[in-house]
Image (cartoon, rainbow, N blue to C red):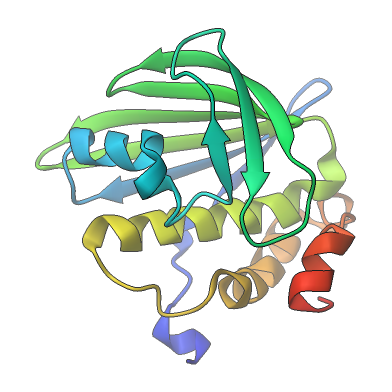
Length: 187
């Protein structure tokens, strides 16, 4: 598989927003699937396994405690809380030290997906943006019923340089966790 088989589209790149004490990475993707189908991919375990980096355990209700376990990497589970659950429009929760928000808007026969990841540490912005970029790419493949043209690790390695250049050195300090490098090798 070559990187030309899965190009990096400028329209799909996340945008870094710096705020007071936090940073937000914002993505917008148009998916050619109705909101109900996209919502199921965001909330049902069988669909999450195709694109989201962890399992999600807990009630799908505002205020519910959540637990997230990585499937392929030996990273300890994380906890979180459901902040918003408004089918099929808004899903927001705490995922470890990040706040993740998914907003779905009908767009013709498809869906406009807005995704934000908000956290405190600027130095991990490029790393995490590349990770979420890959997750959203995998979501698109899963919704289309297609196999991804690259592994998630290979895709991350393909896009990380783009985010490091786009966000700058202050946002490119954090390396992947040691457990990730144990599983996939050094960056």
